[in-house]
Length: 355
Image (cartoon, rainbow, N blue to C red):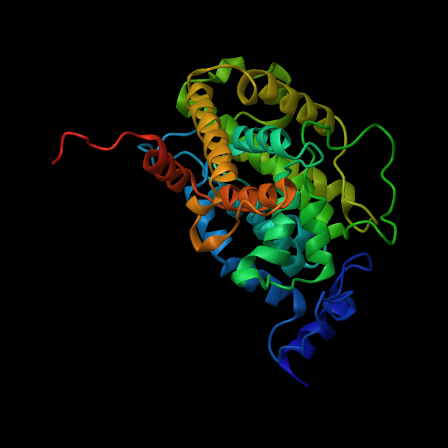
């Protein structure tokens, strides 16, 4: 018996009846021989962790852009926080930790530079050339692992991880409505994906509060009083409260959920952050708006002069939609820093005083 087979046997014996077992995966787009040591989800986790797209997350904005400040979250640190919280919840619920971790590590691989402002900018500018197209970071994350990584070969991840990636985003929607959650159907994402979906919000709301305090955008007394009364007074207390409630409400259940009053307060806190931080005009957002204008100008440049992109990615003989997809892939993969460098290269006047 190989080490992988021993792990699969352990999963069959000890994981919850509602967990996803590695040996029962629905497989990959391209079949592969099994690994003697790692399960399919462990292999997925490792492929994501070693990908170029994952490394680039360290230089992509989460919410606050400040290259001279070392302690604001980046897209990479957010991803690691989601993975840690997801593993904690998955272990407590006896779900498949490796699957939850793989989804968490991959969920934001397609995020463009400059946070959600960058996402909106790409969505707006691509429609100028191809009205039928749009940009969503979770769809781009799936495109990264399916197509763009490894020079067009993709990472060939399992069906379960791919579904978890594309289903993780909630946007501004509440985590749940007031109806009882339904057990997942055959075409629904696994419980490990639902675990990541919740933990993503637990992670980013609490981290963004912390960063908003640091940036001076919020003061502790600005938070709604029920946040302190129900969830806790500190960053750590709030995460602990949310996680404990998710575990208590979901243990040995065919769903992952959060109960009252914690759910209502969490949803209200999300609405508060959107109104006062995410879409509210402040100094931090003013800087990010410069980044969104930068991305749009780069997009228009590459659409008109595709030869300015490296590796002959596109040419003017292509139809607008094909060219727009290639440009979108290129810009979405940029880090904040690289996007700025390309803008300076193409739009900043060179030193004409030199002879």
